[in-house]
Image (cartoon, rainbow, N blue to C red; front, side, top):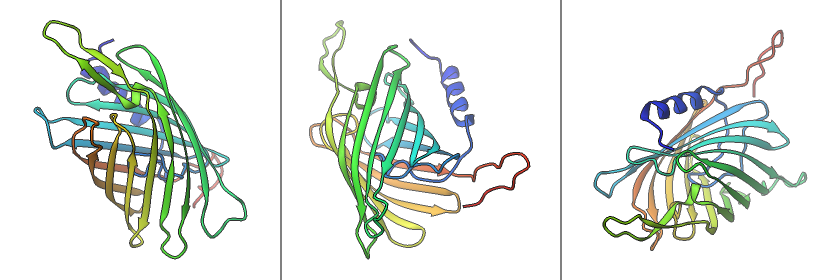
Length: 260
């Protein structure tokens, strides 16, 4: 199913207009974080990747809308792989993420996070999915959060590998469904600045190491980093920019606005 650029623009506008913005951080840079949107609030994240290799140069993006449903959980909708070239992997997603935390733990802020997404291809009319889980905790004193776990998913997230390509013949592809390690670090530097980084193992579209700087101001978060693809993945280096916008929840009619 081919989608015109006008229809793609409509999809983006509907996605951006589908809710209010709220504060949390559902990604470190590229992997899911141990945070969720607060109950009754929305969060929106946009990530742009500007590749430094290839001709023509590629721009790719990921867009995530989250809504906090309480019980340390959020529901999510995504628009993945919107780019300036072929959009052959454009996909919509619907998912859920939740973390579990020991009630008595105040020293290490330990969290076990689980989540998943149903993924719908807009070109191929097929359905896939993605699941992930990780453990994380903070080191006393430095407040460093360390995260490690696993991820498994379909080609809608992880892409494909070209097996052969001969003139006049259809391109043979291997659809990738990798089981891989995910890991991350979040290190506060000042009240507003943090160093963050994360990594997917393997050789697929998300197999990268991404170090970045994060800046929080008011209800906004900005991230700038650089993507280094894993050896053998066939990926290309790219600048990474993310933006998260936030607004407090609206009050019900006749009730005061709640603050946090």
